[in-house]
Image: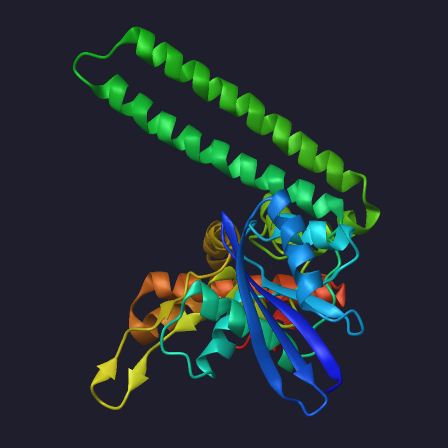
Amino acid sequence: MKILLKQTVGIDVAQKELVVSLGRMDEQISIEVYAYKVFPNTKKGFSSLVLWVNKQTLTTTEVRYVMEATGVYHESLAYYLCSVQKQVSIVLPNKISNYVRTLDIRTITDKSASQAIARFGLERQLEVWQPPLKIFNDLRQLCREREQLVQERTMLKNQLHAECTSAKSSEKSVKRTNKRIALIDRQEKEIREEIAKLIRGDEVLVEKMKIISSILGVGNLTAVTIIAETNGFELIKNKRQLVSYAGLDVREKTSGTSVKSKPRISKRGNRNLRKVMHFPALAAIRTNERFRDIFLRLVSRHGIKMKAIVAIQRKILELTFILWKNNSYYNSEYAYQILPS
């Protein structure tokens, strides 16, 4: 009987279901993906998944559960598996998508995706995932709740403007809309206070917030959103991964002389992280000489302002990661060295 070196559970996580494939590697480095099943993305489904895996795998070799970081849909499963003492690895989506391109897969389905994840876990040395600190989860929830309130308030203000400028506006309707806006204002204030209280309770995070906020154009809310959405850069190993995680990486398709698409950002990453970088980029262009030089150079090169603004967003995001890892404050001379134009 061959000795197994590795056993993996590749899980393609969706909102309502878990598509699972099992893989194993023997002493001859031979890889086999040998079982497949679908489970509901619920607590009952989690327990059924573990029972099924236990029946299909050998107890002599550790089993690693591997999944993508798919928004928030994977989180409940990851926490459950950790609670029952299972080894978990969470991989950034761009790593899996890049790996899939190296395989001979013509049609990508949920099943083939889970099989690719299982193979990826067998071929790579993955780190064991540890649940992030509770404060990061709390901050992320608060930041997202605040963003929803801001969007709702903007919509209400637009409605109020339309109502007030119409020929026959309704006083009662205007009054109700103003009340809803006032309620949102109070709720947003409460959320800001909760965020500030959470940060004040963690001395390390207070210092990290000061470091990131030292970048011109990056305010406290931007800094806390970046920290919350990346769980303190938990899964991020380099700048390229961070840019891809935010969906700010550039995608371009070129083949010979007949196929050439315009370069575009992928938008396949964390939209909350991507969205929060817009206004800091505009502020940096106005107030920071280094960023303004880069912006003007890019605009003069291709004439597209939005493309240049996105480039500034990427550079600011990269800079937050570098300062966080190096535990150093921003200064203009340092920026010239680490932010090539």
